[in-house]
Amino acid sequence: MSNYSILAPRSRLWIIDLGLLTVALSWGASYSLMQLIIHAGVTVPLFLMLRFALAVPFMFVGTRVRLNNFTRGEVINGIVFGVLLYAILTFETFGVKHTSAANAGFLIALSVVLVPFFERFIGKRKQSKFIYFTCFMSLAGGCMLSFTANGNIEFNQGDILILSAALIRGFQIFMFGRQTAGKDYSLINITLIELLVVAALGLVTIVLTEPTALQYIPEISISTWGLILFLSLLATAFAFLMQLYAAKITSPTRVGLILSLEPAFAAMFAITIMGETLGLLQAIGGGIIICAALLGRIAEGKRYE
Image 1 (cartoon, helix red, strand yellow):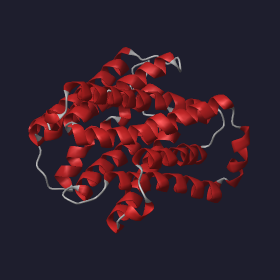
Image 2: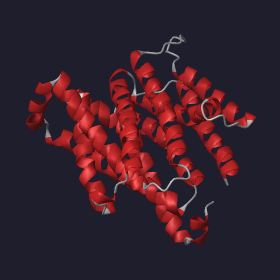
Image 3: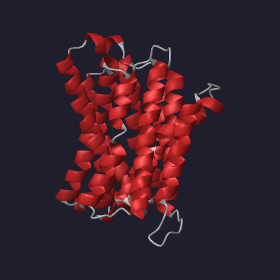
Image 4: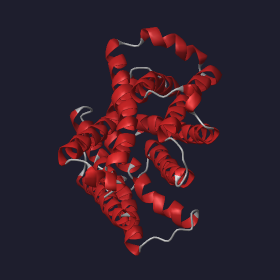
């Protein structure tokens, strides 16, 4: 655990844990809510533009950042990670249109165990055999999610899109650590640029591919606006700020372990909100992915500390 967490009072750590648990809950709920928003007629680029455009002002207020504080390196990295984040969210949002919210939550968790492969083959950093064991555990769990009711293995279009998002997300996590380690960058500044880029790319995509989508904004229902605002404020602005704050106070392992509960919450909301059901093999597969992610976090955390 970091020196910050050793000095921080225990009551403060519990507040941070509660905040991170709220982030995991909101992220878990996001898959079901995205399905509801898309089914309500909001296109994917329009949804991403609205979600991140609404989040940016709250990020500025929450961090009190001034525009003249940004360095060239922060802007470049923010743009790069913003493009990657837009690709991740595009694949994710299109994916939930064609697969279950529970499957989406479980499959996106594979990004955590894909990072060691990027570190090994691109970063040339050796990993313990146990880390690779957790990676193959997750892949086995992902295969079990593909079993249909009649026992056949079948990955649908949505599953493939979510797996693509997980692959890019794993690469983004690897690159973020590689690009910012040992450098005097403000993570808040990079994050703000990242969110601005996602909102801008959403607008550019709308203008180039579906300009009439902007005319649908006045027709969005109050309930759908409520879902968009929830994802914008809680699952985006608050989530990013909470992670950055927690990283200063507690250890990366503690943060990662709590956020690894996201797929479990995704399954819970998929069942309660969307009325989805999980077969026995799918439930076991999802459980294996969660266990693998937790074990991998613990092993990597011990090595880090």
